[in-house]
Image (cartoon, rainbow, N blue to C red; front, side, top):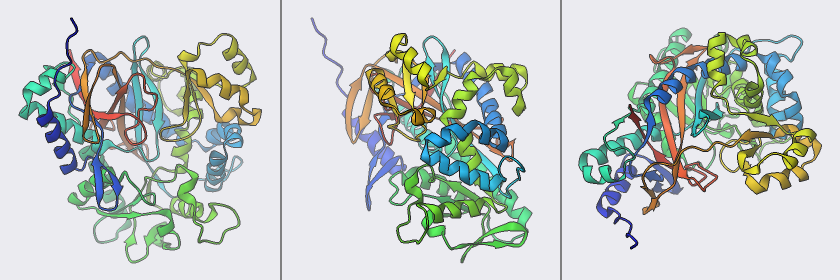
Length: 485
């Protein structure tokens, strides 16, 4: 006898969709129109021991990334081969060299680094939690992480029978997620500090640099609104809108026409060539004018996320190099041997792409156990399984350093089915796996929260047979976390 799947709770699903739209958990679809983000109807669980490990080690990773970002000699030496293979990172490395004075006589830019880092993990069945990637520029969806946690709390309170049926462990305690609040508090504290230092009157000013025709606008606006409630003036500008409107005030103060001094610049753009295109500007080389706008920002005394250095320090190549370093080598950036070993334990194995690894891959590596990654940000930049070898075989040697092989992580499936809701349509999913991103904020190397820099989390879940898990650009959905003893 075949059992029918349980009926989907239509009323609870409709309520959840309305709640999501009403609380800004949405993506823009057209002018004046939006759809809710994909979400799971009930949370996933993690063991308390593994959660404690992540809470301990993630701030150490942030300290490590900050140290690397402020080590221009290392970045230039380590990334020059990759930059020759990847035109966009070559562009960034040239910009970095101008800002820092090259290898012979490094200089310190006027800007103060504001590292807003999201470190993404998967909980592998064998290895335990392992880093997938570092996100140092446009590390978003913290506000959505808080919102979906609030949604699950709403469902637990108002439709407890639905929650009990679909949560992985219905009695488990929810892990509080105040990512929106904590990120805003950290940024606001930095903005106030910069305003006091400047001696300028008026509210601290925060500029978010955004892409044209942005569809992930609500995640950004939730953060802007939270900052405004804390007394921070917030502005949204593209690089094109900033071009020609920035100038220098006393003591290298960054000024914006008709606004005055800027205290914090936060990039939600700048991680792809398209963000620097400006067809209406006369320039000798593509993207030159708007790249100079970004360069101009870092030449002023303003808190910046992400600096060019932070963007380079969170590249896949740096991640690969760290996975191959000894704990002693990591001590270069201030970690003790014990701390470095803790970080090493969470770095998944990675290998460079070269003639030897390509030959070895063809003969001995199991393609189901590896992922081929380039330097791209966002979804759509990874190859899996049978797609890897043909790409390696077709690769010109000049491309090798732009790529890396990473051990493929296999997290355990959720132990009971749950409901995925996308575009108002719900379906039962039996093979859901999750990816956990932890946010940390450091300003000028110092943690900006009472929790050693920790500022909330983002859970994205997806069916195990889907490769792309992004909420914005893949088959992922927002989720939240509960804690097992």
